[in-house]
Length: 154
Image 1 (cartoon, rainbow, N blue to C red):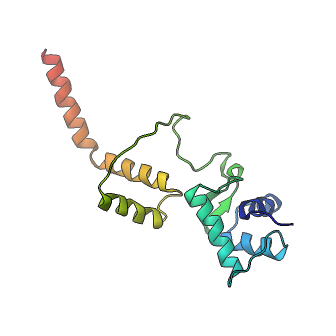
Image 2: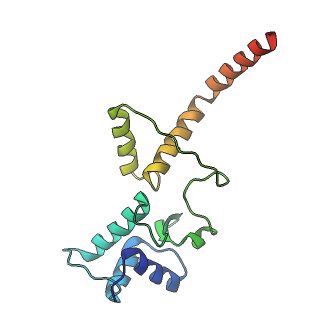
Image 3: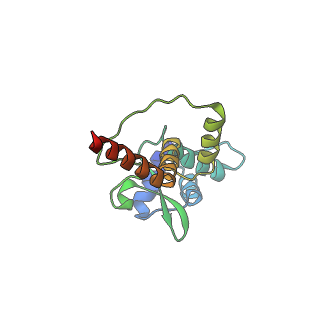
């Protein structure tokens, strides 16, 4: 029985009924023969595949999520996180934005993404924008107040 990494993880997580570390999932899936590997270190290879699938959200099907706990970052099913995914959505309202950024900024964002400050590259960008916007909130408030005052003068 050969499954994808995510399919095997779902089987393990459904049986355990709780989130687990990626290496715990990997060991159980390999021990049970749900997946096979020719890697030098199959447990680490499988665990890294799971984490990459979630982080990059490209091959993350069936859907798995990261769940923060006192035991560290675990992998779980969306239903194990109160039925919600960690993907950032605002009342199902999203809008695509295309930007041309200097290479050095893109490289910094990629470094932040590799540091795993968020689950996916997209979530990393959103987090950085939010932090940046909160850092300039007072400037935005002043600018808007100035413009409103000018508007009232008309």
